[in-house]
Amino acid sequence: MIKNKINKPMPRIIFDKESLEYSYYQKIQVDIDAYNLDKKFKVIGFLSILSNEGKTTSLVNLANSFSLNESKVLIIDLEFSSPKLHFYFNIPNENGICEFLSGNLKEEALIKKTKYDIDVINTGKIEKIESNYFESKKLDQLINKFREVYDYIFINVNPLLVNNEIVSINRFIDTNLLIVKNDKTRKDNLEKALDIINSHSIKILGSIYTNDKLKKQK
Image (cartoon, rainbow, N blue to C red):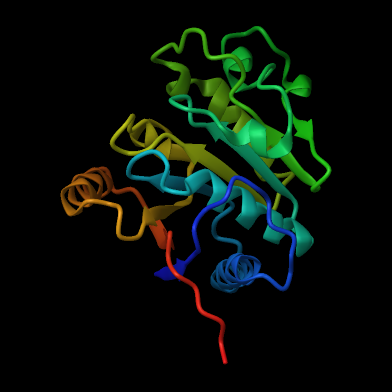
């Protein structure tokens, strides 16, 4: 199981290759690539226990590290409870996965190209979420199609104790990274999240600990 620690999450994409944060995301990327030499997984879910634990920041910066290493990456934002992904890429949160699943948007209009060479599918306008969105065959077909196009597909998922739709979408996710905010996540909440993970056989590749104090290697 891959375990890594990241400093206090910042709402930004890190490009300073001399920074400790950049080196830690790069290390996670190298670890995942090494573990995935036979390409046994492409679709990775990003899970957290509650909101504001650094999940989206970790996802975006890890995607950036993969992209800089010449991997073709797509991010799909399924965090309907509190979408933030579009802020990182400075794109309007419209014409996204919600419109597509409701039949109001064609597939070719879904993907947003970004200056970081990372493709993004945002949530779109969340006015009414149908309970069957996550069980839609259109979503399965979309993921299966993108498997043939991208090296990695990162799925941003609602926090486990906020809305555990991971139970529904686990069918097309190959594995997951669990984001834990060090010294902030309560033990009882962690136990509740692990109960969900274990009872539904949700695969966990490893964990990323955020809010940790980093020290330079001597």
